[in-house]
Amino acid sequence: MLLATKLVALLGAVPIMWASRTQTPFSNKLGVRTALTPELSQFIERLREEETVSGIAVGVVHDVSTEHGAWGQRAESGADRNTTTDTLFGIASCSKAFASTALGILMDDFVQGKNRTALPPSVTQFDWHTKIADLLQDDWKLMDAWTSEKANIRDVLSHVSGLFSHDHSYRPTDSPLDIVQRMRTLRSTFELREQWSYSNQFYMLAAEIISRFSCMSYVDFVQTRIFDLANMTSSTFSSRKAAKRGRFSQGWTGKGRLMPYWFAEDRMRLAAGPMGVISNVEDLTQWLKILLNHGTHPTSRTPIIPPAVLEAITTPHAIQFPKPLDAGLSIAGYGIGWSRMSYYGHEIIWHPGGVPGITSLLAWLPKEQIGLVVLVNASAKDKVTNAIAFRIAAELLGIKEENPPHLFADFTNQHSSHSSSPAASDTNATVLLSTTYAGTYSNPAYGTVTLCTSKSTIADCPAVLDAFTHIDSPSPSSSPNNLYASHPGIWGSHIRLSPLPGGHPGEFRAQFPYLFPYGHGENKTGFEMMEPGLSEATWRFVVGEDGAVVGIGHDRMSDLKSTRRRKGGDVKDTADVWWEPVRD
Image (cartoon, rainbow, N blue to C red):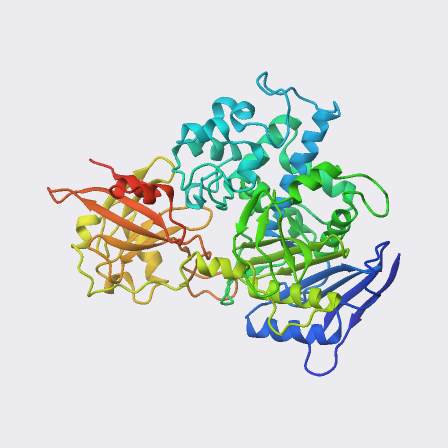
């Protein structure tokens, strides 16, 4: 029952905050208290200003209450631009829990005899141990024959397939089936079950399995089997539907530049499984209440998630972080769409999300019956989502700590390059003339790129250089050792190569920026977006005795040493990706 819905105008310099509180049947035995206090609101507003965040929404489930709050703006302009508790945000990788839940529900349909299609003859039981090769048959193959044969559903969705993220290998027009079929051309980084290594592609594979064996699209399956039953009336995968409702938040870069919603209608099908849900804190607290109530809707008593499914997806199957990321935290394990660890002795299940223009965090403490959701309409703001969520958790649990954990933000910083700005050319580096490396190169998974010097006139080089001219400082004309290319993908539109400082001849720092040469929104000046952890690599050109390029070794910037690198070999043998020149 709705107890109160009010607009709270906090005293002093703190702007208006939207807040609501709803009665629920939960009790965590910690005593009834208010989570979204004036002090917390001041903390959030200060954090919002310090971290260049436009809008934040928060939802809390605890005691007998559900609380919602919102701060800042959801739009660049307009009379109705304030963030409210029903403002819709993309939730990024927090979507993975919906994919794993949906797949578990489909498995249960087969157990209960409610399935609408038959399994392949080679599949006698459809569960988390089912081999992908048996399920998808000729559509499935990896480079490593043993992994192709033995990998099961739990392996790939727990991120222990050995296939590290190849996020620049897929394109906006791809379907989930395209992604699955292209996996045979991708090099694995580790052996099966050797190392936890995150990959979005396998949640695209999950969406393909669901659509193939449910006789309906993945989007429709989640809508009918989760959103509708959970009374998540605002949640959708469609940016068009979200925009029509008039409450859809715009997104900003980490530095405050407005950008379009990243998974527009033409990308919806591809992104749906790993990162495509659009929702708000009102719907997501409803989702948290169902999780806390063992998969059953707390009011209607409708069973939504079979208990065995909830147990399977929240139980760790792989070590995600072998060392605690911060004080008060344990090591962390990864289940299927959820991570699990201890926070000062309190068990917490959580997942972060981050895509261009969005940062999100969902967390719940099953024993204490606490649920938390934080949504931010800006890129790479894990510091903000974690600080808010763990401050609320600490208050509700009676934990005193000065600095809340940074969680996934720390992991991102440890395993990716720290820079998000254009690389200046190292004119002192010992390199061959950039014309030696210019030309067209191809990889079966990544497609074809034409590398341009600052003076190239072939192919689409003039248009490529013009785009970078609107972005870079220094410009291409003053960076003679740099190379540039167009490479349209989900996470980047172009490639910039600059000599690696202190590197050997032919070693380049590769960046995959998404360029906005003419800005977006009211600001028409050019800018670029680079997603942390995805936008940088090292490229090593291999030149033959005749002076011609033999190929390019492409390695992600990561502290994790691949199995191939440990075994040793030449650049072609050890690279994560091998590009070959396209000869005339």
